[in-house]
Length: 595
Image (cartoon, rainbow, N blue to C red; front, side, top):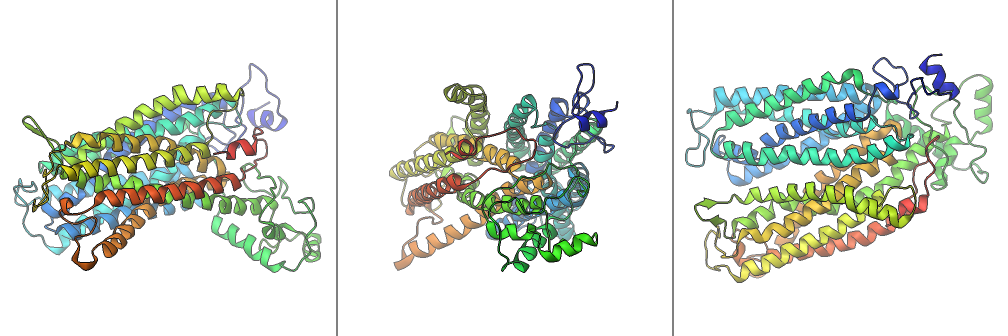
């Protein structure tokens, strides 16, 4: 009896290879054998791949604004806007990658193709910089900016950077989900490993960015751009080779077809039957049989709520006529599993919207925290601390709190619950992340109050104008790092667990788009604050000279907005209902939705 027959009959013997139960297949499309695929062998390959790819991406992104000002001779405002557009484009491309992955290519093929595009973009940037843009030779430092460039050289630069954005953006939401695919959540041991994987995935991402922010950032800040870019290209290429090397070991979910058409079919079918009298419960709704189903994904079971959509699965007299003819119009009758897919996404949206305000807090680390640090005492004997390097304390905090959560908090909560269930649920952890984010903003605001107390109000440039040491920023960076462990890791786990098998990459893309919208909303919020705080010729809360402003008030405003967001989030989490998959371990919905 082969593995496929064993899986179908549910018979497993001790001396026989056991198949996974979540519907994953191997590279040949056969049911994946548990002992020969996935698990930590594949997981470690993907973690290393993620670390190398993140190193490569931030090797370009961390100092891109300096490259634009020193090499391409752009002014600060233009360079900042161009970097914002580029960063936003990365997250937009994440939706493209998620769509192609879930619909047609599958996660492995999507990751491979976009990583190749990523490598091509990095090589192109390295070549164009070394051969054309770093002219005259040795230019690009703060003391020695480069000269002007012809338009085709500048276009070559933008083509290279947007290939990088396309490659990394399309790859990023899929690699996290593909890594989670290597663990069968229908198996209790592998289910725990899957939860641990997301923590280690986020840690690998932070360690990669730490190397970029320190080692590569130092070379680029000194004007040695070519070495920094070539190191990024080499790292991305090594990651691609490593990823392809694990091909035989990976588990796969088959793509499920275009989700947009499936969503539209449910909405159209429900509206066509808007006047139909629906029976109570979900007993008479159309349930697609296994023979009709074209994919191996687990079926979503019926849940109450969004009753209007149930009409799409109601079998009317017209549908009975079609059934006699052996025809089913997907625009008039949809299986209840397809209806539940739409319900799942609708339930996720309020939770997702609540994460955007947190992303506003998170983005301050790369903007206002740096400006605040630059206005503090940054020197220790014979050494000047770059304000942006303080983000290293955020990365250290992430590493420390991942260990604390995995080894201390999670087991402790599990013992209190006195059950075999994991400790804190994803929704509870995201709520804790919001609480710590409030603490981070309060800490930043208090530090700013004391920075202003020891500042020279008449300083024209405000760099290092306060005698307060930059090391007082450590608590706010540490709080941001701790909040990331609870919010972003919990968010990755939550969206992966609560999206249907055919939309897992879309779930990961939601995490990335919340960061993107957080950036945009932060820009909007700063503009509004400056408009209302500069009336009557006042300098405003965030002027060029921070010593004449009130950055502390902006931090306290973010603390208030995050507190309001926390209240809304708790209400949404209480309302949320977990997805129900056929064959999944029984989970107490109320316990999972507790905050």
